[in-house]
Length: 363
Image (tube, rainbow, N blue to C red):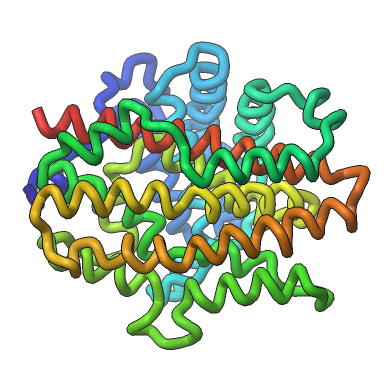
């Protein structure tokens, strides 16, 4: 199964209408061109001396923006989210070759990121009634949502996990989830600097527990790596990047955006509140699947740890962060609710996409 996981590609487009300056392969070829641009020494200087160097890639960005947000193309969405991820991950340090970060402050990369994010975020917001959120009783709605999401209803995806998924499907689940699981809470670290107060203190407590209070063997990502190793999977971060559907990448990129822009601080904390509240129920499903498949305790250790700790984290986030922020920012508090609802919407979309792919690769 490892060979299959390594060789699967979500890019299978035909590459029609290719500009001559992009190698064959459609969006896959355009992404390869982008990787080449990332590896150029002093990319901005090279662009100044040869402005045509990015024309082929830029043409594909424009094509993808049209096809993704006007025609709902999965290939275009995947291409855009993979490009965004490759830019966003430069904000974190991966203990890799230092030369990989030589263009991390490139104005060109910023322009590409902004161009994609502007269209993508406007498209995502169409899923929400912003006026209704702005006119709601945010505190009451947060309490109502929090109570409901502690025990969400059984969905077809949930039933498939607990009752049907095979060992191969479980391995695929771990492989694709590793894109986030092996660097868990890293993006959260970007919001913790600044003035000290009770909200900041609570967020730091959550982060410290995610990081095992500074002990590597207790860090949550260590438990995730142990699950993967138990099932014969490669534990190198991003090793299974090629498996991630665009819906999962969108959730990750959305969190990069919210943590990198302090104007979105309230939205991020609303989303984190949902994530911590609903976490135990999701991990119970994953653990139930592992038990049904007669897997070892090591192969489900990450879920066990999260079930215990996220019950605490959910309460902290709701009471000491989300509700506290509604008092501090009464006129903007609706953004906390937007962040909560967006995280739920995007998380469910990503989860359903992963289940669809598991079913595909199991047959």
